[in-house]
Length: 120
Image (cartoon, rainbow, N blue to C red; front, side, top):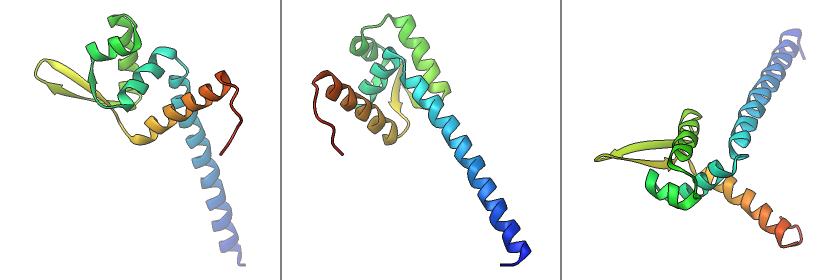
């Protein structure tokens, strides 16, 4: 290998480490948002399809102001999107990865609550 090839490989490795670090930071931020019971309930409900604030309040049982604040955080983080339907604002998950992540977290909870054996 030449010196320029060695430098390019080292530079590529450094970029991968930086990318990995940024990736881990973003993933940790997403998981931190999921660590709140109300936000987890909201995302779980949105995994079933879009919903307006009234439906989300019913689904998670939290007060309207609390639900609105949590939705604002999720929207600011880019995890949910909105669209207008007349006077209503309708929320939806930004992508299916988030739905699957929430589903898997709830599956882990089911295993711990039910003392189910681990599996892949």
